[in-house]
Amino acid sequence: APGLSKESFVICCKKVRSDLKDLNELDELFNMMDINDDQHLDLDEFQRAMTSQSAVEQYFMQSVPIAELFWSALPRGQDGTLFETMKNLSDSEISIMCRALAAELEVTVANSVASLRKSFATSSAGQALRMHRQSTQFAS
Image (cartoon, rainbow, N blue to C red; front, side):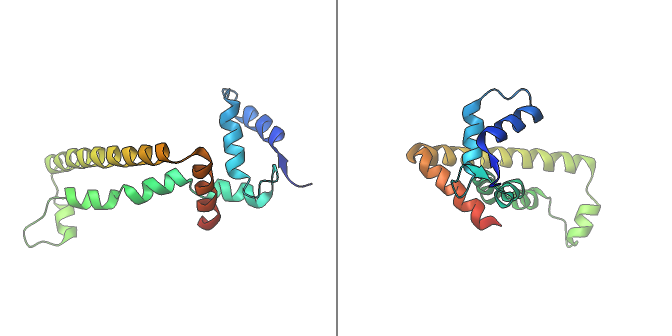
């Protein structure tokens, strides 16, 4: 058997999530997973899809530097090590740090989403699909 057909994939998805109504979305998902375009998902394609990040996930992982935002929001101690600074944070300092982190994260995510929207607006759906397939091929 060559693998899971698109029809079987749709049936399986509906059994797992009975609220799925958008067949176009399932069709798109299947097409992204079917890397060799043979209209069947073989075990390798399925495993790759389940273990790799989508192109959008990869984009956000690269464009939203959570660790850098965290470190920039961390108060700097006087002559103490980072461990000492972290150990001695008061509840008030943690609250201030979290608000600063949230504000920076909001700006960063808004900029990333705007950039992604612009990218999608200037590329065709076919180009976006090919980019996704290439990213999932090279991610594993």
